[in-house]
Length: 198
Image 1 (cartoon, rainbow, N blue to C red):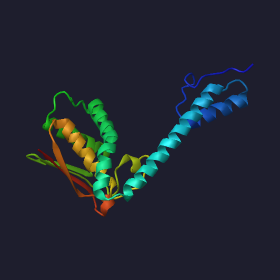
Image 2 (spheres, one colour; image 1 turned 90 degrees about the horizontal axis):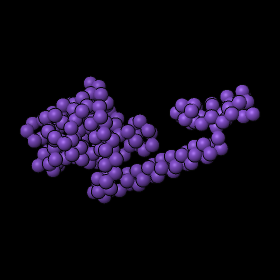
Image 3 (cartoon, rainbow, N blue to C red; image 1 turned 90 degrees about the vertical axis):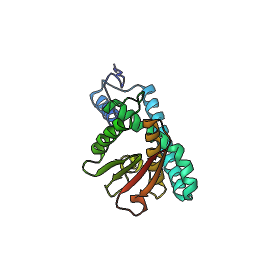
């Protein structure tokens, strides 16, 4: 008699663990993943493959656009990254979005920069001008660096610019203009953005 144990019951967290669990079940002859769970996993994998392919090809297309067109497209796409950062900041650093305050935001931004780029970042403020410099010598976009889904391109720096604008507008509840001063994907030695609160 075969015993069917759900993925949740086994506390399985990855595709490798599912495969391992199935193999152990076959060897021991007493445990298997249900047919429905296998189908769900296959569907998840197909969706992941589809989305990853779409991202790769979309960003390849963005890399081919002129700067003005790429900037328009990336003003929308950067919102996904900005939402991820905002959620991280609220949950990990206690920033209160209901009470926007530039000084509080700068403290949180410095902590976040130090967490992601220890010893390699500089955040300064002179009145309404903020300079954010990251000196890692490579693209810091999580789609490039962490997930390895996207190839670095000069236009990808515009996504960083737009993300900074979105974050500072959210944090200050004011319009913000951001300028890309230097980018690793553009031959620079750092990523340098200058924000001006309007």
